Image (cartoon, one colour):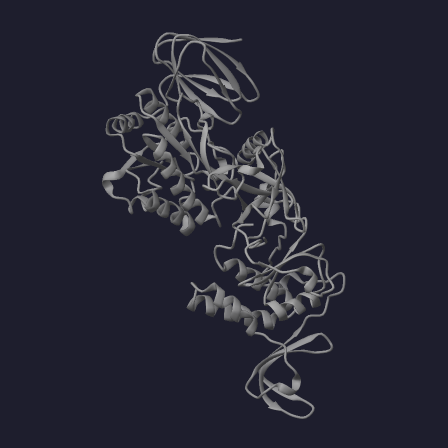
Length: 141
Length: 418
């Protein structure tokens, strides 16, 4: 294939890779998006550098290496995700401030939702290429 | 066979598919003079005007969607003829035709070239509209030198071509700008003037870039801007005023849907590969271009010592390139990355159906081809192409489309895959 003529292709691939790696972890994804926005605003002509820096935004670590003041995302054994800033590190627990807790467990088959509880509804369309540009909807190899 | 009696000045719109024969008198088809006995075929989804030069009799046969419509007046705006008279008098070397999609750029190019020919000039026409190229197959830009009148630009015999690599110049901007410059230079060696028909991509950053850098690289004597409502003014502001000629759109311009464009492309490609045969290229002699493959230092795969079926390996400044028989374990890649840096992998067989350009040592395109397979171990590439002599092929230019020999587009390839 012809050579890449810009580094944007790699940037798109890196974003896809990171979104997949942090699937089910909206806190990590939010941090990546936020940094991506900042980087792109500051250095839009250096997509290669953005590609290199983006994986450094969220990195796995060991509990023993956490330090006070760090912003962390903790995935709990029950599937919950807790994020926040570390303010205290004890031998059996750590304490976070400015925290968020997210329950990402799967829902039962039928989920009743009261209309009055809904603030906004969004429809997801997953076959946009086929719908909008059918002549380019090639079979996958 | 139905006949049509015409008087001087009568205008008829011919819509393909149809064939037509001049039985008496003389007519102008797309500005080209046709005398008694001349025959013209208009393919489906194309239309051209016919004007009687005097009393004339034409006979025609209609095919699918074919239509003959007698019009009350000329469809070609007077401004077109005024400009063409100026061109014939002043004989500019480089004429660039610019306009959005479906404004009649190809028709104007044909009409201008035919009229120049009628006045004893030798015009060259370059079609850089890679998606619906009339001169040369799709994914290429072509140069044709007019020696006789044509009804459609695609009838101009191909003199030189440049492989862009895709049906769209998007992500192929470098090939596009280099190619158009290359063709203009070649055209001026063979023709009195060269007319460049440009793609209709005029808006947005990439569209503007494509047009403006084409303008800069060609440096045309005249820029013909065919527009409906001033839609080219943002581009024309960069061109010296004295070189710009603004023209209205011809009234009978026929717009095409994306489906029609795709089917026209498939038809043209299918026709191109009708007489194709298999050519075996020796990759130890033939250079591979526009790809990573064969640009590094070969590595003896036996020395790698990893558990993977690697058929080809090379060391590049960016890391390593390997060709594997099937997907390998992540640990193998990690092991190789520790030794060689970034590892780029190609899966054997993924080259199938890739569209490539075949060139000689002077970088002249001999034709396009479809890769059937690459034997990486023996260094052979089998290509389906109308090019007959493998010894002439000095280089293979990789593109980014997959097509079938019948012209059907079946996929695109991620840049940098090969």
